[in-house]
Length: 91
Image (cartoon, rainbow, N blue to C red; front, side):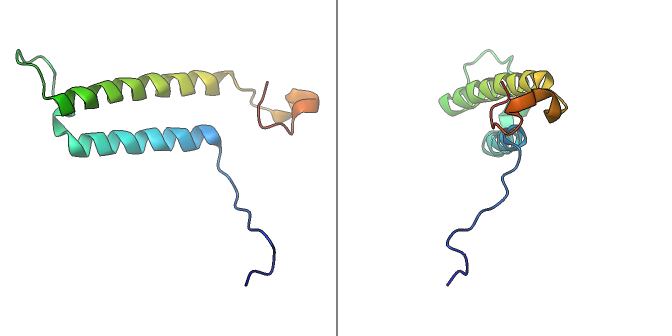
């Protein structure tokens, strides 16, 4: 039996967690479709699974770029946020 009624775990930074998830997704895609590492200049159309994996990879790249842009606009010093320093959303 737990001595406290609830257990709370520290949560990592959401941007770092999303970034790590995206990197893991890329590793899984490459493990399932090693052809993602080769150039896609072949005249024949790719298999449906590989085509879907390439589209997912493009979406992951776009999301990663968006996360980098978002992280670049975040203030470095939480004290500059003023009254909203304890908010989860920094705007």
